[in-house]
Length: 118
Image (cartoon, rainbow, N blue to C red; front, side):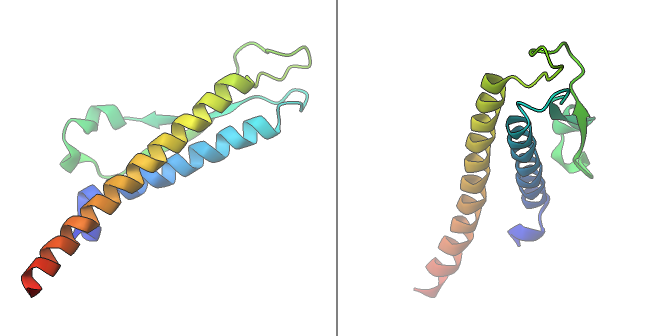
């Protein structure tokens, strides 16, 4: 069944990581006026090396890191509202695409199951 397949597990992990990225963008935006706050983001480790062969992917790992780059504000805060807003929109589009892909896979199973009934 699809929900036990590697493809589904990868899509599910993608949704979870996408949600974490959305939460980080929202947290950064919420702290835009917090003195000394450093923006946070996700860094994916060793994923690109394994991406060429999905069967090799055992786990998708990501780490939350603070951006230590220069401050964009005099109080030491380095949150860039425009970059965070664009990142938030990007995660929204990715989330929609992942849900569409999962829905499409279930539609295929539904079609096969329903076509055998007739």
